[in-house]
Length: 209
Image (cartoon, rainbow, N blue to C red):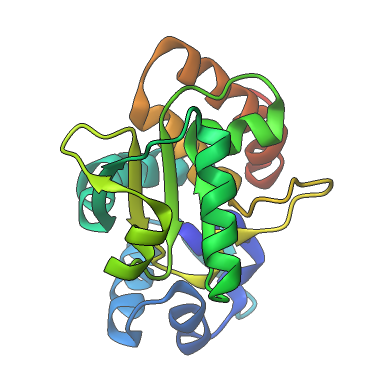
């Protein structure tokens, strides 16, 4: 569902290619796609598939993100000795770049890169790997209510290259939007609507929230 929402043309791919790009097993992809067909989110005409009711599909995915998906992706929460999130991200970028590993920031920090509207104090990062050695380099300590949340990078399509992006790697706007709604504060929801209007509405062929 994530892949179809960020790239509606992906509905034309084979099940095998959809599974590969989504980072899931072929059987899992087939189950989801068959269900989407049964519920008429995917229709077929002249042997070509089309993705329909995209806004409704987005709402279902957002519910699934905060529900079953995000808790399964959470690798841990941490605290860092840095003065602010920018210092923390400088260290993240340095450590991951030196090890040639992928990461992507999401939530408020990524939203600030995309909109210059809101950042907040919390930092949420998708990573491909987080070892004890890396935690030592990052100077992070586990903390149940830590301001840093680390999520497992569940698919290569998480990474995005926005025009004029900063040094830091940013997650897809759909994930930034979902994380802001998960946070749930008034400023986060306000910023989520900006992300929606600027980055998601064009993919959904709608103009209003």
